[in-house]
Length: 204
Ligand code: HEM
Image (tube, rainbow, N blue to C red; front, side, top):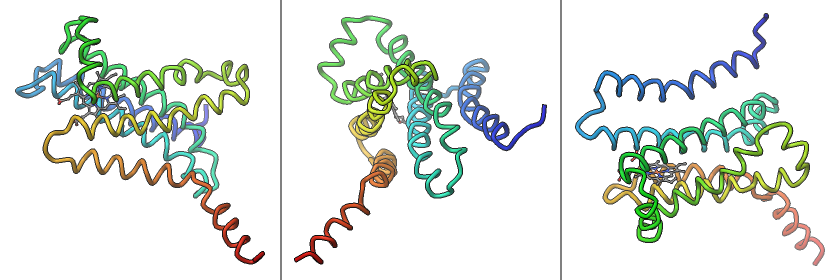
């Protein structure tokens, strides 16, 4: 089997996305998670989830900038890996922080805004993960595209989850929020607006 450039890119994407999970798994196995293992696991999975989510959102601009189809062909894999890390992140919290108590989850969802934000992000993305297959894409047709626009508010919720939970130095979450705003801003119809304004000026 010959390796086409797309196959190499897919392989690199899988390795890049699996490496952090493998690293956390290895550190757990050898018992090197530091003085607060739960925190290390929660931070490790949470920041990877957010980073890969932003990478997923960078694929459309990248396709437009390069004129190549590969970024779109990698988009689903990236999106599903982002969701994989979110599920792992949520699972750590449910098992280690809440000891699987649903009443405690209810209490946290009501009392801690940043938990509400993170959970909402996870919930918004659940239907996207479920409908990510070719079959669902075909069945839903245009509605699939509308449904998958939920990724924009979900990414904002993820960034605000991080901004809200940080107590002192907000630099890191603000960097993620800044990157997200650039990626969302890219999608705004600036050119059409500019044309509209210029058109209006010339017609008066
Ligand atoms: C499903 C509901 C979620 C819960 C219950 C949850 C819970 C948590 C907890 C307990 C922490 C550690 C806070 C601390 O140590 O002070 C955390 C951190 C974090 N979470 Fe979540 N989270 C959720 C969803 C998400 C999602 C969907 C994302 C990203 C897409 C995310 C990204 C992060 C990030 C980036 C951090 C900070 C990591 C760091 O400090 O390096 N979380 N979350």
